[in-house]
Image (cartoon, rainbow, N blue to C red; front, top):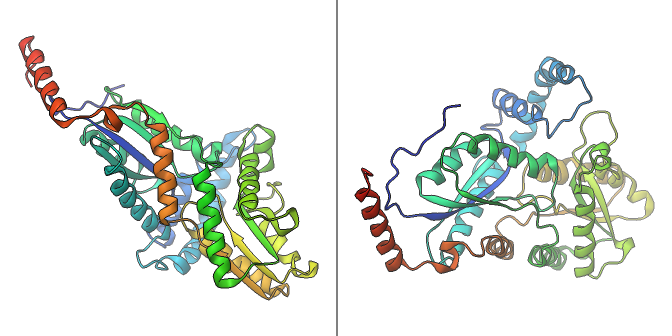
Length: 372
């Protein structure tokens, strides 16, 4: 393997801590061609789709059937939400704002240089491009923060795979730390609870609060993925913060794909059944999504609202994702601070001392033959 070198390295280079925030991804445009490219990358990931052997059979199904049918359908869905926030892809628009807000907050927390970059697991900006940008900005210590509160191999571990694929080509690696999850972090739970309480002030308290998470095939749970358990823990803590009893909320799973059994109960089927059970006022929150996207804006706010109303439900409202709420950003800042303890730029940095030390380092290196 030919390793990627940092050709402009100098012995007096300033260093920085890098914070790489990541999310799932988005197509470049709400068009069939862009969706086909995006879905191929997404559904080709063996972490996302674990078909029984032989793997080549899934390759035939994906390329021969799914990628010839689904891109058109998905493009229509994306077109419905593409400019809802006024900046194209809603997920990417929110993520860019999150990056900027985190940079502003962390500048006031870190004693030395800290650089925040954004990447998407699938699509753009890619993890590889974000890592190279961080390298060019002198990052020597790197914290990766996948914005998935609950761990799953399909999301969090897949992010690590992409990270490793790029870093294994580097000659000089940064010191690396990785946030697995923050599903039970007190500030994250507080932010969720505050968002619900604010929604209640405007819309009243519902008969039932639905906590909807992205689904997974049930066999992923039986094979050891902790996602299901972490979703339920988040929900329990949120219910406790809201003083809800067991009858006032329900955990469900959405975005079901394919014919095999997924984690139950399904969000769509639950919403169809609630009016017959006497629950005519329902609100839905999606605690597993750190930013609004197709799955919340189109699937929940649109498609699932229709299921509930067509079944006779009277009042339905979606509680937005935490997005750029100040309490959400503060929760992420706290997660970052916890995971960067002991790093140079976090608390030990002194600009004058750092400059002097770097100058001495360069002099010593050049004395023994270094060119720069």
